[in-house]
Length: 125
Image (cartoon, rainbow, N blue to C red):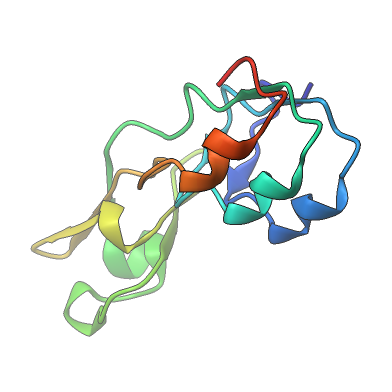
């Protein structure tokens, strides 16, 4: 159970090596981007909990808090530092620019991989 650990970022593709894993609880973290297809290789998986991931929308002064001017932003992930020293990142879909600010809304995005229907033991999603 890895819930409430303040994990930040995306799920690593190396998750496929955990072939005997039956329960993967990653809820209440700060995961963003998409669910990797490698989760489908976890054939014994019975529970996958990913709810309550992401952040509320926060705006940051580009150059000072993100190390990047909004005029120079050409797409891709953006990471900024809040006033408490916490790093907040978002993939391109969660990045908006407003004047000199970056506004980030990190979250899990996209569709559930099609192969989940072929996961014979999955009971909780």
